[in-house]
Image (cartoon, rainbow, N blue to C red; front, side, top):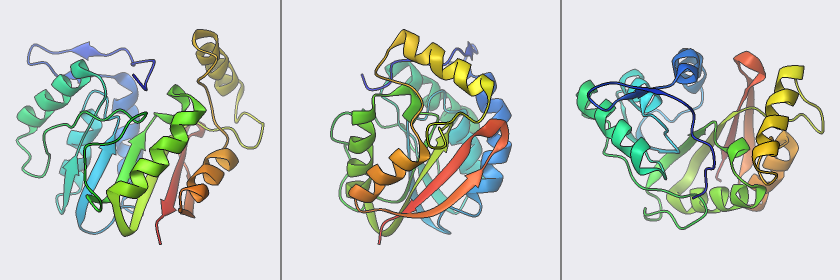
Length: 212
């Protein structure tokens, strides 16, 4: 399994899980994504977690077809529960995607690939696989959008980031924060060009890469 840590979340009787972090960052993410998502087409969200974001994003962007996914069966059940509860027609059933393996989608499946709070929870080798699979899933002119905490060079944005990264590496030395520069280099090796680097609340970043 490519993701080692699953965020704690409350679960409702209908199967929907609710994570506090997703409640906090949904609004800022929607505002930032207005500038970065395509105007129409399909968005593949990789590692959708509880499904809160998928429901919020598909409601905020009704012109886009939203395809959530997750490697964990329990999270996929939660995503499906959010889909049922929302009744949104542009929110698809979740796919089973493990970023360490081939994705079950065809060439040119989507116009954009989005992942939220994933890269710091997987080994660095899986970051390369993520961008390679994203390239296969996109059409020319497509975008990869990555949100989360990052190092700036070798520096942390705050003492809180340093403490969080230390706690992640204590649980698994193979995971932890990646630098903006390292992620950009990996994206470039997969054929992507940097498009934008947006500052987000809590020292997070939204990195957008374009596929020529």
